[in-house]
Image (cartoon, rainbow, N blue to C red):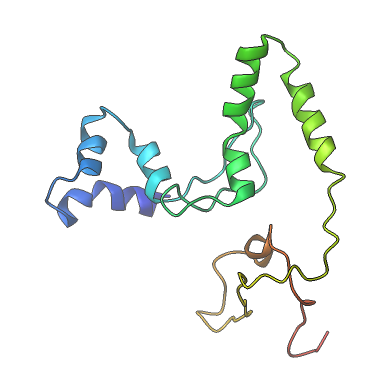
Length: 155
């Protein structure tokens, strides 16, 4: 976060021409530093309506586009506020719980959906000996085509 903030503050020296993004950052008329960070960087950890952090941070920016679960995490507070305003009740959490419980019954029964929209992921530790993201964050929300195996052990 500190490196990203340094990049934003040094934007004027890197690009002396004033863009609309630069004007918004410096004047404060439309956006502040945190909103610009969410536009071109990452959103990071978000809080729910009760003030608790979600376990998984939002790793994408609005510029690159959010994944489905990242979108629902980031929209949770807005959805809850709209429900509270429109229904004028303290039971908006009850509606959210019913929605989550109704989705629990959804099961994918297709073995192979036949899509050509997939990617191959190879586990490679040769780049400086480590990966930037934990393995479970890379595969979270994805459907695998075959079982995951360790190449060295075959298991």
